[in-house]
Length: 71
Image (cartoon, rainbow, N blue to C red):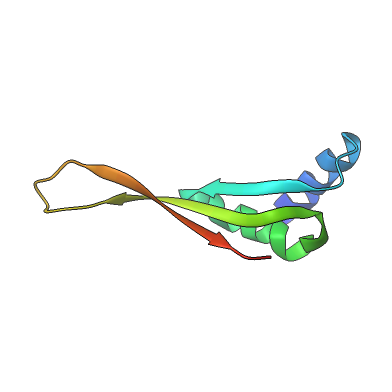
């Protein structure tokens, strides 16, 4: 994915050696692309957030699920 190269370029321009990664829903493939290409630039875990609706179908309560991948 070209996205990882763009993020790398932005980090280089800003003189940032490491960064934290957190993505929500459809952002996960972009975060994982960056983590796969440049694992040495990630500080800590990669956190992927996804909306989750719990309870019965009539319940309108929504929550967020966070899955952190150890790097």
